[in-house]
Image 1 (cartoon, rainbow, N blue to C red):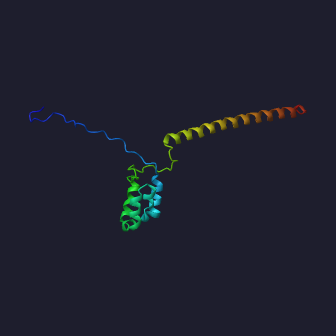
Image 2 (cartoon, one colour; image 1 turned 60 degrees about the vertical axis):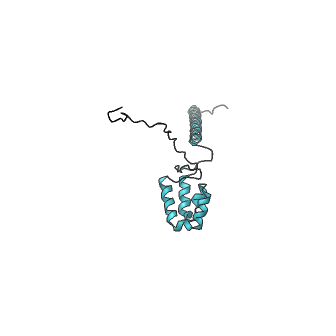
Image 3 (spheres, helix red, strand yellow; image 1 turned 60 degrees about the horizontal axis):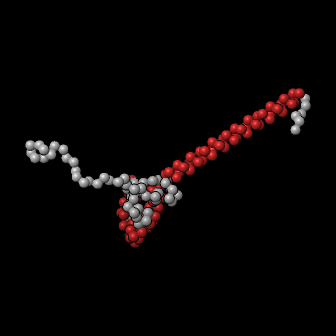
Length: 147
C-alpha cells in the first residue's frame, strides 16, 4: 500500500482470458464475390449462414445500398462474421471438415509422390543410358548383342 491508500500495482481480479477468435470455415473470397455480384439480395449472408438478415437484406435491396456497401467493406477487411459469430478471414476455399493440417498433409503426400516419380525416372534414364552404351560397344565390335 502506498501513502494514499492505493496499492502499488494494479492487477485485475477474475478477468477471464480471451480465447482466440474462431475462424469460419466459409471462404472470405467466396463471400466477397457473392457480395459484389448479388449483395443487394444478401447472397453473401445466405452463404455465411445468416439467413434471417439475408432475407431482410433481400427485401430492402441491401438497405437501399447502404447495408450492401457496409457489408462489402466488412468482408474486405475480414471483420464479417458467419451465422455462428466466427470471422470470415480465410481467402482460400477448403473442403468442409478439412483444416490446414489436412491440406498440409495432402501437400506433403503429393511432394512424396513427386519425389518417388523423380527417382523412378532417374532409374529409367540410367537403364536407357546403359543399354545405349552396350549397343554402341556391340556396333564397334561389329556384332550384335545376344538376347
